[in-house]
Image 1 (tube, rainbow, N blue to C red):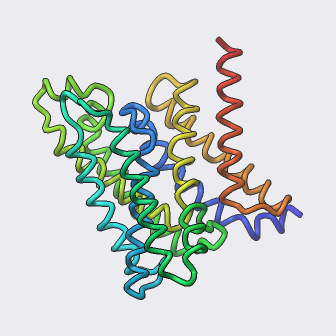
Image 2 (image 1 turned 90 degrees about the vertical axis):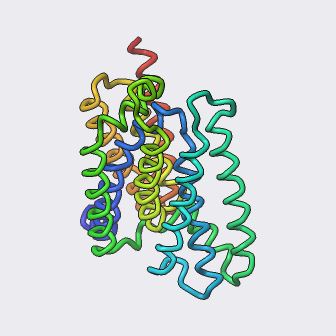
Length: 272
């Protein structure tokens, strides 16, 4: 039974570990900034780009669709960076929510012109991580490593803006400039991730490990390791649920993420 499980789930599990590596880190920024739904919005924008490529008779998951998705995501990054001000009159989360809703509605409209539109909408939400290949994993690893190196080189600017934007402004940092590069790098990750895992699973990888880590971890290193551990555990448990109970893999992992967050919150409350 164990051999059968790993013969089916080994590559998807490795893909989920790769996803966890970068998303748990980016999730810490997202929570510090208070923009929880930015991942959903950028993922939906990426899916919208793929939808438009479908209208031009390209494959929804093909290479042309990827570049469409990336182009749309860069536009979304520009919108989010330009709608953040030193004295914020409108909550940026409201802007993000509106962008998500409009992108989702546009995707439904665009895919309604396709005979397989319903299937593409479903796949954009939950993906199909079971179909991941060795090449997909290698491509994701290369992209995520490059983004991770970029964030490491400019970690001072990114963390200062995430944790204390007023101090960043006071020190003369060009916050909109750095915000744009943050969202572009974030969008590159999301564009690559959503093709494999879908919008909901990518959101779970981003937010849940980071939230669990912030409940228990103090330093950045502790939070990163805790986030990676939660992501790995949720991936393994979710795939076990999917395999042994014959549920969709992506949806199973998302539900396990929700369960782990609930358990972590209860443990934290009991500990306090």
